[in-house]
Length: 85
Image (cartoon, rainbow, N blue to C red; front, top):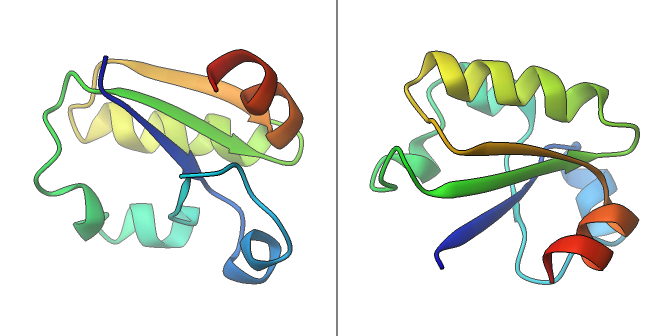
């Protein structure tokens, strides 16, 4: 199964540790069009996480508005590592 894990924290937070294989796209970049996802099929499973689930929930809504349909709020790093890796 194709799955993309996106860490929506700020780059400095991402640099301090992240889920292995996760890409870093903060909400501001998502709102600017998320160029990193241009070639990603809209039905790809995308798991989003931050620290508490708040920013990842916002990111989920942004991506839904962009047409992505298979989105999961993974809440935080620990939850994603235990459930999606």
